[in-house]
Image (tube, rainbow, N blue to C red; front, top):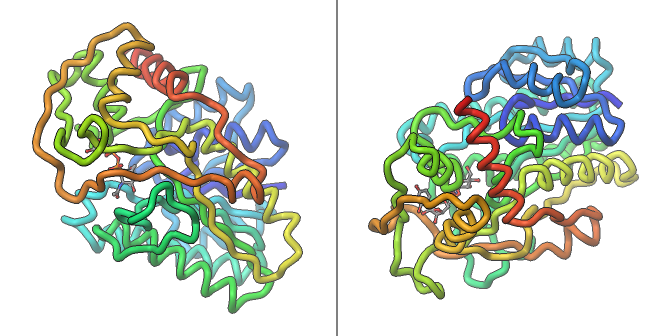
Length: 337
Ligand code: UD1
């Protein structure tokens, strides 16, 4: 079954391409390489022992989408292509609304016009904001978004839900990712932050290898056991496998108006301090860090309740944080050579 993977050269997209092929799907990548490296295509070929077909273009190109749907006989879409930096989204909201909302609308128009039935959408735990009760279930209320980026994920889910309701035959589900970390065990693909990383794990690995002189830990005075924020860090390969399960669930779904959403996390909260300690233990490398004031917009604590994913999607995280950090470190070392 041919699956269009938008953003397939990106961090989560590239790992999902590997898992799709392992599960017998045929991924076709659409990526504009605005936040990814074309070399990823060669790296995928090294892992897979074969080429993956790809198109270098933006998702806002409606004519190209229609051409790909017809010529490649696409039967499903996994839509990763989006901008994802919270801070940048505050400074450049229209870029986010174009890349994340306008492109989604274009994609849905092209899918419905061409009778493409199955869509998996990259959403985020950011839709929950700072929840009152933890862990968060899928019934936890969605709170007003704290950034244009967060808003694009909330509105994106609503646009898909409304379109599915209006267009029998279109089935979709949204995966609400918690914090993806790690890299492929081959160390051939992983996260490729452009410039100074905004996310914790690439900042940790870049500090450990000496690219950054010091990691700032944002906040030591939160109401958590060690005073640092708590997140649910999930190995990117586990996250990739959730997309395969999502696609399989969609394909066998008889409800012509099927739409649902799932938390994709480990179910375990880990503090920023614990993550640094784990990294040092697993790699044997010390991280130079100091505590700094809280970062604006950070929530104190969030992790997933995962029984819905386990029961309905048939998916649960298998890899440990130790494995994720060891893999992230091998990837960082590979990048340096
Ligand atoms: C953010 C987004 C999330 C998105 C994710 C991956 C929000 C609220 N969160 O998650 O939707 O999926 O990025 O792109 O929109 N930290 C430090 N020092 C650093 C970097 C981070 O102490 O140099 C801390 C942060 O304060 C936070 C934790 O590490 O407590 C995780 O931060 P980060 O990796 O940026 O992810 P989130 O903000 O949780």
